[in-house]
Amino acid sequence: MDEGSRSEFDLIGRFFADLGTPRADVLLGVGDDCALLEVPACLSLAVSIDTLVAGVHFFHDCDAEALGHKSLAVGLSDLAAMGAAPAWATLALTLPERDDDWLAAFARGFGDLARTYGVRLVGGDTTRGPLSVTVQVHGLVRHGAAVRRDGARPGDLVWVSGTLGDAGLALRLMREGGPVDSALRERLERPDPCVALGTALRGIATAMIDLSDGLAGDLGHILAASGVGAEIDLTALPLSPAVASRIASEGDWSLPLSSGDDYELCFCAPPEQAALIASMAAGLGCTLTAVGIIGAQPGLILRGPDGIPTSLSSVGYDHFSNNT
Ligand code: ADP
Ligand code: MG
Image (cartoon, rainbow, N blue to C red; front, side, top):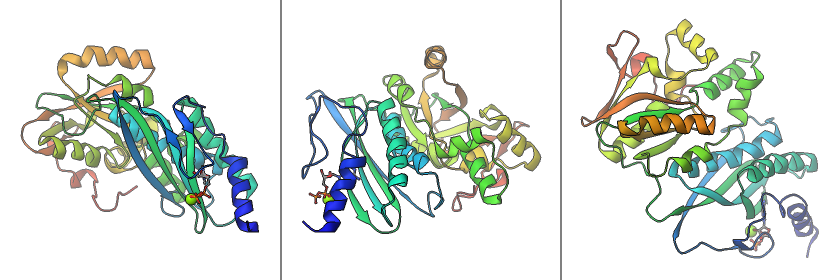
């Protein structure tokens, strides 16, 4: 064994061999050619993969612990959007050089979030090159119980969790080089995936998606998959004071509609479920807001403060720039 592969195995053993929550369904984890995982016969495996590239998805000097957190959080958000319970993750890490302080911080961020949600890191790949992080997540959901994008029906209410546009505002302020409030920055760098909410909505939500690219585009995926349209009331959108004042001063709704990285959930449900959903929000300690209604006619209609329908472009939506 040459020096390079010895140090690679040493790196894996030191930082990645024991991350997250040990689980009985992991027959074999990090260390062999493959991990061996047990999926009970009554459950489906939900799988999703995301890559974060330095300079594209995060700043080169991004805090390593936050990057470890976020690289897992984006996958857990996808599992939440299907109503799947998180179980395992694999991690492909491309590093320009070995930096043990950076690796320790990255592993801490990843491992802390993994433990929060009972996830075990079961394998991966480590290579040298421009910094990028790929995480595959695996979740479990009873056969037929996953919440897909294609189940929205006319009359369903459209709900969103949390507040919209905070991560986009943080990114905009960082790019402008100005000061960024630490709570706002956390929304961008350490998103908290809505895992408990996603699983609680099984059997209640008719369609669901996580908000990674902004409400207009992501809800658009539900509408296209379900063959329906929607009307959204802009005045109902849940906004933090910082985002609300930016909209008030600029008249531009692109932060909640088309900025990325919120990792909140958007879902549809029949109006009869509204009381149950409100009590669920109270029980989980999260905010859930009805922002619109599904209609039979395809297309997305936005109603502004004056109640008059507005087009996406007139409220600052630019489909191609994801203009945060
Ligand atoms: P192979 O050459 O058989 O693909 P590797 O040398 O890539 O094996 O990896 C050795 C073991 O370490 C494997 O079990 C692999 O899953 C695990 N591994 C490699 N890199 C990582 C990582 N960044 N995080 C977690 N496990 C890793
Ligand atoms: Mg390998």
